[in-house]
View 1: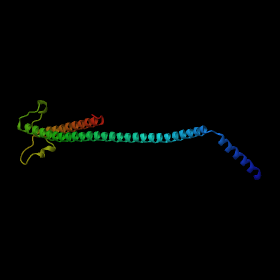
View 2: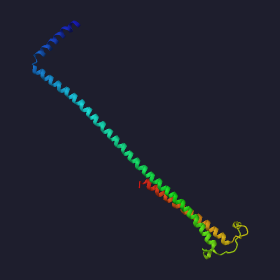
View 3: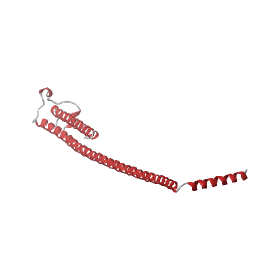
View 4: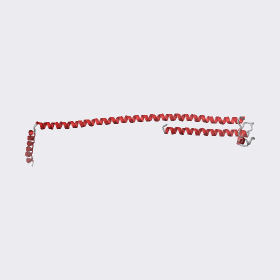
Length: 187
């Protein structure tokens, strides 16, 4: 079988060589031009792909930088609001402490004024002017009797103290809630 193929290949090779010799130089020039265009197209496509890839990577880098800058600005704004809220809460705490001290002082002043007679209770609170038996009788100093007026003055002082403390607490809670709401709403 192989001896039959060899002469066939020889004839085929001779025909191809004769055909190539028969082609004029213009055919070869055309083939060379087509090959050059194909090679240039491939090189240009590779170059364009590299340009597109570089442009895409540049866009990705710029977007990353923009995102990082945006996050930094947001974090700075958040820290600024956090510091403002902290300062407001510290101010509210100082105001609250002062309000508690003021409530205590008002209660002490009222008790002192009631005992000295500068302030008088309304008529419906002065029903019993004598001594009132009870646990408060031992509150006086040695040798001083505790009168009903003294007990009422002490009770009024305690009521004022509790009321002032409650007022200060409620005002403090309101201020804290307002500050937190303002911080949450971004205002």
